[in-house]
Length: 113
Length: 112
Image (cartoon, rainbow over the protein chains, first blue to last red):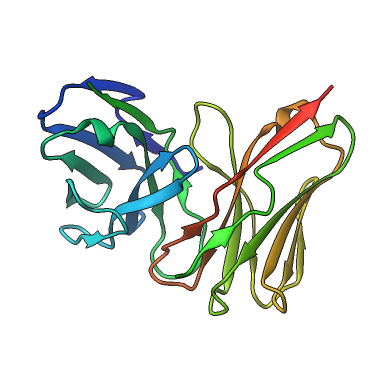
């Protein structure tokens, strides 16, 4: 089975801090995604990546950046955390060449104080 | 813009009954559809998918129906069990590098 692992289940940070959320997948998937999930707003795509060192903006990239130095790892970076970035963050991966279901990690619940 | 939406935000059913969760999509170019289940404290879990060249697909206790004429997707769960209690999301894709558009989700509550 595909395993998508997010490094932290819960994280508490302060306003202005630089925050790193890590995601690792073990199935050699080309495509990886970062979403945030908020009540009433569903899953919103922040950034995605089709390959190492490649990144594409999703629907809500403002305030975030990403890094993909290795195929299995996709990092989400909050450059200067703000309270409106308190949310559940979900990472997903999928094989690149056809319609297939994305596989999700269990999420990181991030609180910015 | 393109969107995927659910008709009902919450659904309460009796244990043993069948459940039907509905979803409307707006992009006629979408050719792949997925249902996910999300339990509290966990990430979305793949349940079943269907491609646009099919109208129906069955899994274990679940059936997905696709009506392209009215752009409607439904998930049927047979003999609903307490373990089925979760939020269910539909998602659509038109093969743009695996990108999905998600609906808002329906919370299914199963009463014993």
